[in-house]
Length: 451
Image (cartoon, rainbow, N blue to C red; front, top):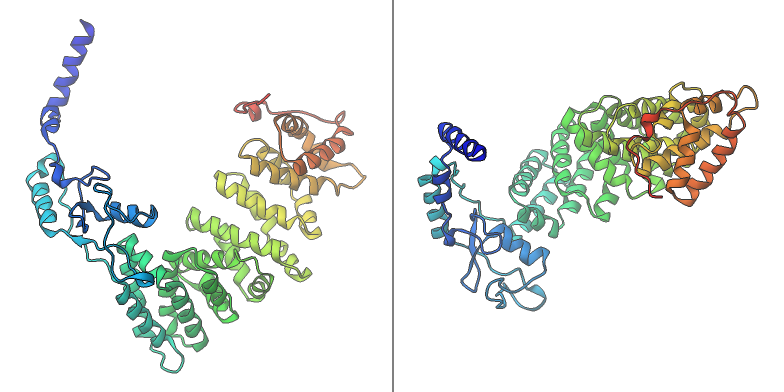
């Protein structure tokens, strides 16, 4: 009886607010307006050679991502352009009649919250893309350079690629990465202030096609291109700095020592990356900057290059960043810090910084397995160089609960290398256990034991 009363009261409230359940239930999408693949209302209906109509997005995924050349309903082979090697994707004919009927149905049912679907744009063809890319190449050449025309063409590429994934794939297939990278290189050689606007547009457009192919990254890794990217990294607007670091991250992933040394020798490049960590624009930019610095740290060879990471205050900055950051940024910051502490200057700087040990111990068993492994490695590098004096770092580690966490970590399980470092740390800490020891029980509150 109580349940019935509550049900009636709920129905009464819903009716008063204007939510007519009965009306909504009666609203059914006509079957001819739904895509046979997703069973959702079609936004861009196209018809195959078999006569069946699908939503463009779904049928393109079926053909391109699934590698299928048959109709999902009839299982018949689809007709394609050309023959042999020159065969192009199956013909997708826009069904304008169905699309107009769907739009009319949406207008008639707008009181039910149905929005009218926009009229889809016609996807760009491969021949149009090839023609557009050829114009970009010609307008960017030093002999006949026209930066204004080049900017207009690249802007068009950006707009077309943003319209649909199909357009973007069409550009990638026709080598957009190499064309834009080459255009950027040619413009950077021109040393003309008027080219800055065009170079900025190219950088912005390149971010749409990440990750780039090896050839494109090789071109962008030239001295002239890297200097131009570094200039935007240091002096550009917020969006320019963001685009510059995203492209730079992709270049540094090649892990080529030569490119790292070139970038480190460019004035303001490292400082620009550090500034993005210190004064973040958005989480993605911070992560990209940390990854770029990480590749630079592990691939730098000269002593002068290594000391620069310490001189710009990266050790202190990263430790302060670890105090309050999300999982992904924490892992990347610890990775960079572990790389810097492979150098003697980095170990000395971390040893003398008051927050180093407390923050690192706090990250043990709290963030992720990767973060724990990095934290153990960094602590091991700091503690193994402890002098035979008062052993302040070891005592401090005991006070913040390092001994118990390391023991528990060995029981839960970890990699062999981490296990060796944790065991060595326990031996160093065990000598001073009688001097000071305490543990924060909250550190183990959410830990799930596997034994």
